Length: 277
Ligand SMILES: NC(=O)c1ccc[n+]([C@@H]2O[C@H](COP(=O)([O-])OP(=O)(O)OC[C@H]3O[C@@H](n4cnc5c(N)ncnc54)[C@H](OP(=O)(O)O)[C@@H]3O)[C@@H](O)[C@H]2O)c1
Image 1 (cartoon, rainbow, N blue to C red):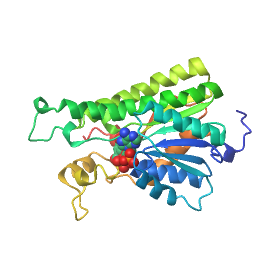
Image 2 (spheres, rainbow, N blue to C red):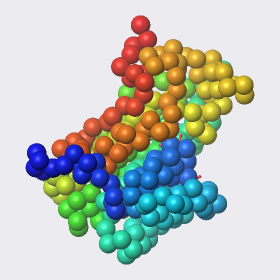
Image 3 (cartoon, rainbow, N blue to C red):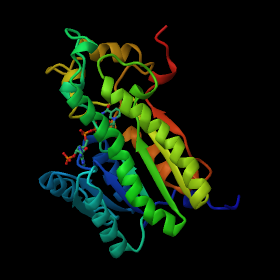
Image 4 (cartoon, rainbow, N blue to C red):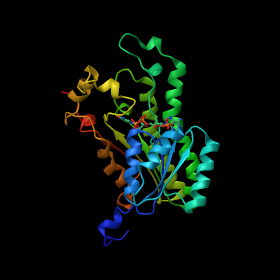
């Protein structure tokens, strides 16, 4: 890239074909809308057709084209059909955002339980959704990236990847593995497919979303005891706003980050750099 490249083109996402898993959810839904507002061609993936219809309706009037596909991120054949449909429509895939993920009650060790109570079936499901749900779409879309010698993956990590966050054992293990996979695949892509293929991740701090709202906030909007302990360890003393993830995603998806691969960017109000002391 020339040093005289105009700055606006570094961040230009106009016409980029970007597939977003979990795009019917809070964080990825907001990000997918933002990308469409930047003129990107955004493919919304989720399992629930009604949620997809609502998410797509919210993009009406935005400059970018959008498409929605109902697909489970663990279903390789279904993802291959989506990839082929996207390539048939737009000729290529520029990027994959692996945002589908989450936790479930059975995989959580609540204060009245111990590790001995771990529900292995729930644990494996959480590990499967967050880790395999990142690996399988990467595997499927990597076929397009390898052919194009160009492609970009952004994974969703978490604060739970690098520090012990009480209760969430399966989710933490999975997100730690997502960090490792991000680095591993970044090196593998560069060696085998060239410097046009990159892999990075964002690690959101605590954002209030559907799956953690009741954990973080009381009905009157005040923080729960757990929410308060998160705020105490967050130097900014507040939860994140969904739009505050857009900048890091935009950077990683654009040519502004052309020499950046294998990184995990925390977007966390300082949570990850603060010991609490
Ligand atoms: N919220 C936070 O504070 C926070 C913090 C750190 C990291 N994260 C991570 O950020 C990502 C988004 O979180 P969020 O809070 O926005 O979650 P969310 O609102 O619960 O959205 C997650 C989406 O994933 C989709 N999904 C779940 N299982 C799926 C499957 N098997 N196949 C395809 N799609 C599936 C769901 O869509 P359907 O029901 O339509 O399938 C859902 O809309 C997750 O990876 C999460 O772990 C969140």
